[in-house]
Image (cartoon, rainbow, N blue to C red; front, side, top):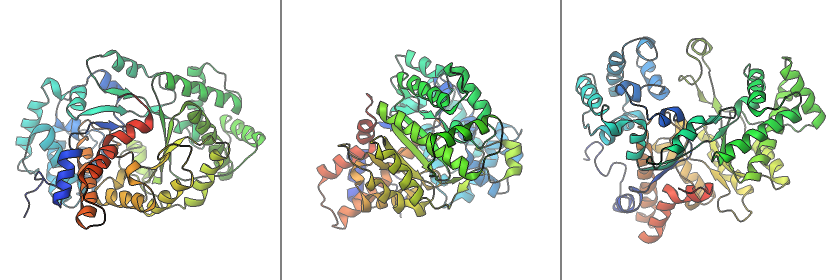
Length: 468
């Protein structure tokens, strides 16, 4: 029987162990999609206690605490940080079978050198030991990033952001980690939301363009894309909860846009026409500059309206959507490809039932001499656990080229979530190792080791074309 989280955790064969320790373990990290705060990095934020760094903004943990009957006062409410931590510690024993059980212990072990099993009885010792370490200089935002062997990361930034904190980060010549912005223009695409009109006003202000037409709107967006490009951005990110494709004329789009900024209601078809046209226009901007476009597909967000009114979005009330995506997604990408302006693109699906859809669709638009031009992104959100990772990589291997895969991202707001890269690398090595042990592929360690290194770091570095 293995010890919990022993050195060969998740590694079930000798080949997997060799691949992990000789090829994967010490590779640097390029976390090209996360939600870390640029302000926190720029100011090298210190954390007052483990609750702030471990529970603040972590809706994964919030969801299971609610499922365990913890009152909201001890989750997002006004309870003390100590009481919130104690409530979480008492919840952890009920997480057996949930990846949070392994992740939480892994984070304690790697960042705080604490081997205790988390529960109500050990909570006080963990609280005191972790908080004592958080007072040390290398437990700041920058310190934690550097300790995680991160070579570069990309934050997620609204198109109207000034990127002032990215400029400040670059001024720190001793930090040694590249922090790139990533453009997130969702508020300019989601024309049906109440935020669209005020956001358009903000876009007008920051771009210096009077947005009185759709053409002016696109010019303002293009100006922001160029600004982001000059600030080092090489990728965008889009939350496409429901896939759309509805062709339209320029005249129709102009009428739809003017209706929206005048506060008039739009039909579903008008909304889809606008979104289709705008995403295609943005793709052209990205392609022109050699960017990568990321599409995160299939979230069903803010399903609990009562709690949305109390807490706002991104607080743990989202789930997997089950909408049909294949035909509309293929048409959308095809429209971009017709003019040879489909950029390098990473497709992520939240519904694992769509794995084989994405795995086949990317094969339809490869080419242009670009290895892996279209990518099937890593297991995302509810799928960034062992089974989800295995299923995503197996689908990609069955349908395309796993060796061209750009690998794992944290998609996290936490500065101690980089153990998820270790978790992913162990799962990857175990998968490839099992194939070799079963005689399905040759046990050529130079061949397989090179493949592991590429997926862990080199593929992403080369794909994004950044110097890191």
